[in-house]
Length: 176
Image (cartoon, rainbow, N blue to C red; front, side, top):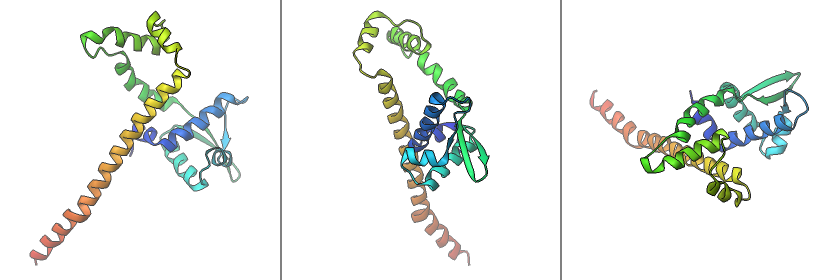
């Protein structure tokens, strides 16, 4: 079974989680529920594609579902993401080398809400959308990781099909 990192590595599932989070944040209700039909409309994907990804998210506890007749209403559950947060925190606060202690402290300070040193604060103010820059970098890294894993899996299957299976067949014939 895929772990939480594999689940959120898929860009479609991240987009789905974003739709659910947006609904939760903008909703007047405590549940922040959204129907599958609304998700399909917002994402511009087919209903089977959305349902497939919602199943993966549901299986890993990232969404909850409420059934009402034939309709399904989904909402985000962020508690499984704590595993990601726990994994990331040491990296955000790590001192990778003695010369980068200030940089590591600044990263941790920014993440934790502690005031950031003046020169870095001024640099950050020049960015139009600093949160989007961080999101873009994170998404690019996750996409690259997902694509690399997929390429390795595909190559492994291809080696199995083109090399290993013919050898197994040949060895099986020699045994007769």
